[in-house]
Length: 93
Image (tube, rainbow, N blue to C red):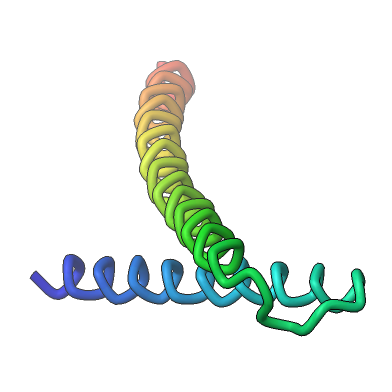
């Protein structure tokens, strides 16, 4: 249960961070075009949504890759154990 709580907090954090990043990019783009920072508010809402989705996708991909790496490490550890048992068996004979 503790890991799920941490996962939810991390996902919420990524969503909020992505939303602020997207809205900030839209405000920055308006600044470059010499417009008021928050003109065309719908573009800020769209950019915030895209930023939140991108950051959440990144967090999900990171979790997926972490699971893949752990599975590969477990398989490699089992292969190494088999190899070392073979080496020990050959040494003892």
